Length: 195
Image 1 (cartoon, one colour):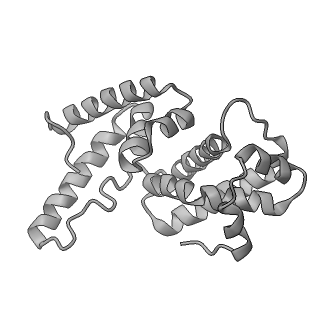
Image 2 (image 1 turned 90 degrees about the horizontal axis):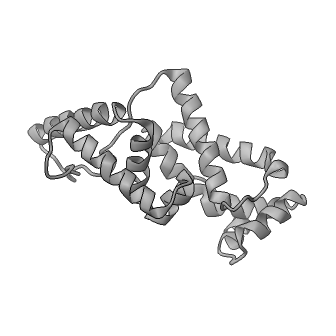
């Protein structure tokens, strides 16, 4: 996906906490930011890819997120949230700007969920199901959309979603329950969302 310099790979395996790396990056140590980049590149990319559905665009937007974070690292202050939540907020804003500029209104919900070798009939069914889900998801409130993307599509743990959405674990579980219930009623699947 992305080329990572060998020196940065060593930092990513480092046990240095984010706050120490941020402090070093703010002091002008580029390798510290490089370690943060390497540590969070994949999750930020996956998040953006679920929102834009295009690998090349997701890579470009991911790099933009890290560029913005690097340019603003001096202004970053830890306020009880992890650095990953800061990156997520930047990523969310970048994606909103992307959609606003291009007026895109859908995402690929079935990314990676397709049958390995579907026949023509199965492909038609999958495409129609994906279209139905995209339309239904887009009609949900933005918080519902976000919790479904993070918890279901990206399969992030509840604690990580809670951190990124600035909610408690229990609030995320309740939000996900309501979101999935609303999505099921939109697509007429009373027993669950097929994936």
